[in-house]
Length: 146
View 1 (cartoon, rainbow, N blue to C red):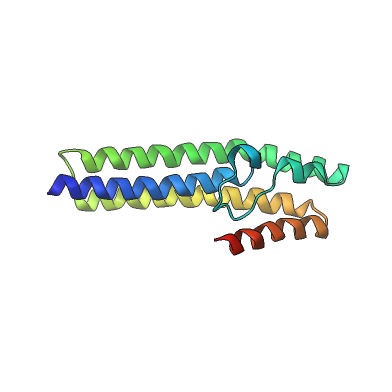
View 2 (tube, rainbow, N blue to C red; view 1 turned 90 degrees about the vertical axis):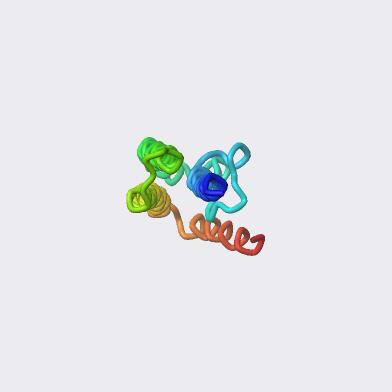
C-alpha cells in the first residue's frame, strides 16, 4: 500500500513539473515547434519578424542573452525533481527531508519563472506599444481557450 501512495505522489509531482516546464519552455521557442496550450504568452519568431527592424534586433538580443540562463535554471529544476523522485523512492525516506527537497524544487522552479519573466519584460521594454498589445492579445486568447 505504501509503495502505491509513493508512486502516486511521484506521478503527480512529475506531471505538474512537466506542465510547468512546458509552459516555461514554450514562452520563447518557436510556436510551431514547442507552443504549449497553457503557455501564458507566446512571442514567436513569426511575431518578432513582423516588428520594425530596430525593435526586432533589440528583442532578439534580449532573448538571446536570457535563453542560456533560462536553460540552466530549467536544468536545475529537472535535477531537483530527479533528486526528489530518487529520494522518495529510497529506503532512507524521511518526511522532513522530503519536504526540504520539495522546497528546493519549488525554489528552483520559482527561479526559472523569474528568469522567464525577466526575459519577457526585457523584450517588452524594447517593443512599441502596438507590439506589446499583440502579445497581450495572445494572453487574452489563451485565457479564453482555457
